Structures are given as structure tokens and as C-alpha cells.
Image (cartoon, rainbow, N blue to C red; front, side):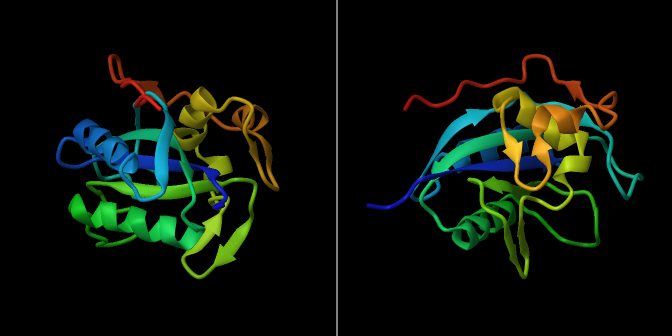
Amino acid sequence: MTTRVTAYIALGSNLEDPAAQVAAALTALDTLPQSQLRARSSLYRTAPVGYADQPDFINAVAAIETSLAPRALLDALLALELARGRARKFVNAPRTLDLDVLLYGDRQITEPGLSVPHPRMHERAFVLVPLAEIAPDCVVPGRGAVAALLRNIDISGVRREEGARAAVPAA
């Protein structure tokens, strides 16, 4: 019997109709092998972090149940990014789609190109606000509860997009 794990995925886009890019990625997450979309947050508009001379982002977080290994999940996410036209021109560059493994069960993973929990998620309102929406009791290994982490950061720049919540697929 294959072990299934709940993984949380951050989604973001600020190019080529970002809301549509994120919506398409949410649909694609439910088609990953050995995986099923279990929950998805609303869409949130946020200012860029790092490189500021670019459009605002649309962000969301999804929960998937998967039996893919962490590296296989990352590879599948990178393939989805590429299929949506992701180009990695420079750090924090504008992008059609950005998918990050935030959490993979309660595991802590440090490998080349894969760090779980995502190393900066506890500092990023654009991750914690949508994560708290779908998993309010979630604990970030080594960092603590999402609710407590939210109290330590400025969330004023995270704005929920009206009418931007889609239904979770039926099980």
C-alpha cells in the first residue's frame, strides 16, 4: 500500500492573466499522477517581493493528497510551470506561474533544489494568509502554528480577490 501525504503548494502569477494562470494550475494539480486536490484558497492580490518593478501577483495555496515522493512532486510542479510558459530570467522576475512545495506532511527535507518546509514561507504573508484560509490548524515544522506565524508579519498588503474562489473538485 502506498502512503498518501498531504502536501501544500503555493501558486503565484503576475503575467498573462494571472488569475487565469493560477486557476489553470489549480485544475492541473488535480490531474497530477497519484494526487488529488483536496482544498484551495481564495485568490489574493499582493505586491511583488524582492524585485519591485513588476505587476502585482495573484497568489493562492492548495492542499493535495499525494503518493508522489517529494522530488517527483517538485518535478511535476516544474513541468506545470514550464507548460504555462515559465521563464527563469533572474531571481524574483515576473512569471506566468510559480509553484512551490510549502509542506510535505510533517517532513523536513533539505536536498539540492528542494527545501521543505519552504525556507521563507514563515516570512511571507502571500503564503501564510491563503494557507491559514484552508488549513488554520496547520503547523510548519520547526516554525510553529500558522496562526502564530501570521501574528508576526504584516498582512496589510494581501487583498482577497472578489469572486475568486473556485469549488474544490468532488472526491
